[in-house]
Amino acid sequence: MQSKLFFYGFIGTFFFASLAETVFSKERLTTSDQGTYPNIQQSVLKSFWLLQFDNLIKREQTNQIPKQPFQNTPSKAKSRKMFTETKSSRQKASDNLSSTFSPITMFMCGDVMLGRGIDQVLTHPSDPVLHEPYMKSAIGYVELAERVNGPIPYPVSYSYIWGDALEELERVAPDLRLINLETSITKSNDYLENKGIHYRMHPKNIDCITAAKIDYCSLANNHLLDWGYSGLKETLETLQKVNVKSAGAGQNLQEAETPAVMEVEGKGRVIVFSYGLVTSGISPGWDALKERPGVNLLKDLSKKTMQRIKEKVKEVKQQGDIVVVSIHWGDNWGYEIPSEQREFAHKLIDGMGVDVIHGHSSHHVKGIEVYKDKLIIYGCGDFLNDYEGIGGYEDFRADLALMYFVSVEPSSGKLIRLQMTPTQIKNFKVNRASKADSLWLRDILNRESKRFGTQVKLSKDYVLTLQWN
Ligand SMILES: [Zn+2]
Image (cartoon, rainbow, N blue to C red; front, side):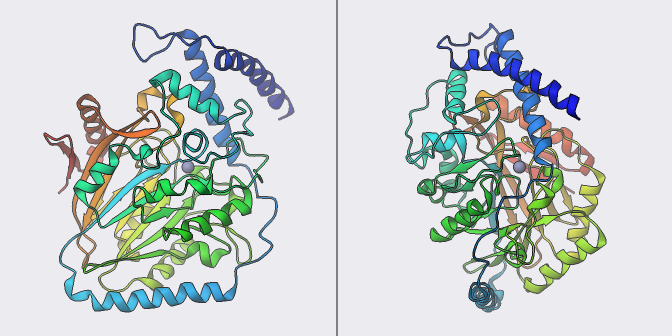
């Protein structure tokens, strides 16, 4: 272990020296005739980042627990309030049962990372200082992106980062907009010292979430506690202030497990549970306990765990409700879907009343399954982040993603339609993908979904539609 540390330390120092020279010198990296593929020096840099990225992720899986829990544990009054809200929504839902025939359409996407470089280009950037081993300022990520794709006109408006997605959201007009928020929203400086990467967005930038009329954020992921328990607390409070619902984290286990309940007027309720698995890099010590803040972590997929989920769904699900399980699971890279993951998804649908599985953590899109007429998205891919200057894993095209528009029948939870709009992260915003990239996504989805008996068709307006038996 010691010798390993020494080895990585040596390698790290060597590469940091190269990186510092490359990143901070005024000389721009030249590009080769291959277009976007840079010269050898940059390839080395990319490989280096890649290595660091993997190492950091692995390191994040080690036992890291934020320093101190909140001074104030959640009040009973607050827990009671949450329960009352659920009750009153339940009443409303039963009133709406007669009108459950028109489908509910939900917009879903994968990781939305609004920290670091993205936070720096918004109106109220956080202190740019980073505690990463090889990058010491968040502005460095802006500079890396600008080197690859040209200037970003910052400070940008709150709607800027959503780019073409806003128009598409208006066109489709989904009933709900659900994202996985892969960032804490906080001014906290209480970073986890043993973790290599920390994402935070300044709370004054919260308008970038409301600019896209986001209804809900999943929080059970591997970045919510980057800035300690105070970061978790401020994230929850900031979202609450702007009436954006969330699930998957809380000041204790009860709060972390509580799903978000959303009413779609005239159609019914959508209930979203947020879970995270350690396979996504969430530290086992991040789990919320009876009297400890944290995330809604599933440490295993044992029978006991399944029973726990079943009871939670049963507690809240009423006839006509749609239950979504939003789950952060698996590696960042690779198309493989472990059999354990697939079995788990099937069990959620089979005996637990879950209607849609919204999976994320992979930086690229993965295969899609329809099981007993219920949708399983194994990996949405990253929707927005500041990685465009980092490079590495080019074959996966992590810059490409999809806006998933999921239409389900409220009375049964059955999938009626899945349409997907191809997008590309460029200049720190979401852009419509080109025709060539849309075709590439189509082919990847068809290759990866073949084993599930699903396929996608690309329409003339470059929207993908899922077909299944
Ligand atoms: Zn993650």
